[in-house]
Image (cartoon, rainbow, N blue to C red; front, side, top):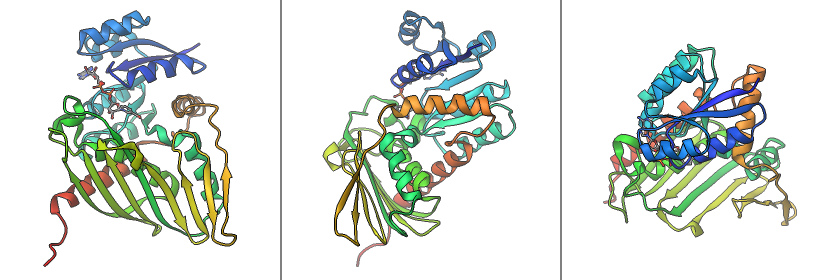
Length: 324
Ligand SMILES: NC(=O)c1ccc[n+]([C@@H]2O[C@H](COP(=O)([O-])OP(=O)(O)OC[C@H]3O[C@@H](n4cnc5c(N)ncnc54)[C@H](O)[C@@H]3O)[C@@H](O)[C@H]2O)c1
């Protein structure tokens, strides 16, 4: 029997979840809920049963899985209610709009037999998996410096990402959390952070440019640069270590390149792009349900990312030391 998936929040990313549950073997999307009637109508056209109230959907449909695709401030309440009902949850990132919200979700997950995955999809991206494989093989020796830049030109003035209450932060909370999560995935947990986050070009409450530097628990320094108002030409992914440099010049598909200090040569490593990061993410979750194991991006890893981002915003408010 197929697992039945329902989706709460039928905006932009919900399309990826509906497609993901349609493509993944052993699952089918059955219902969707949104407060926006047009969004519900679109989902009904795609064959889902539509609801305006997500609680009613959970109680009527009794799905096996719920995808949470709402703005972040709603993730904790919806996830907790679903987990209490024994429904497996895939919540979009960031886990929540703040650390208390993320803790509520982590507690609900700990008290439930159902699984929670926070959809930090870049962990499943072909080039990132190749980077991880090479790092785990020790190609770099001791990692020293990580740089992750997710930049692009996106108008967020009329998006939930521009609202402090709904999103908890702007580019740093949104794309920065992906980059911080990738540092955690590749190189381990973060020990301390410093940050600048500002609103440069867009009229909104949250940051459209942010720069975060930090130190990992294993010592490797990290730098994350994100922005809704910084052209994608600024995108750069590099890790330096004792034995050389790993570089992902084309984030979309790779290859991963390694410069060896010993030989002074670059070597290219092809990436497995046969599946998208989303396809791998949804498959992974179903495998976790079947095997009864925690997903790779779980309450613990996502809470850590949320804490690192919160510490970064706190640092940004402090403005550092004056030069005099
Ligand atoms: N993993 C990724 O790469 C990725 C990409 C895009 C978005 N996201 C995340 O997905 C989430 C949603 O982003 P989006 O771009 O789809 O936003 P969106 O604004 O396009 O869609 C959000 C939807 O939630 C609905 N909604 C609001 N309150 C609701 C409620 N009480 N009940 C039901 N529906 C409600 C809105 O009406 C809207 O349709 C965010 O957390 C975002 O960070 C992740």
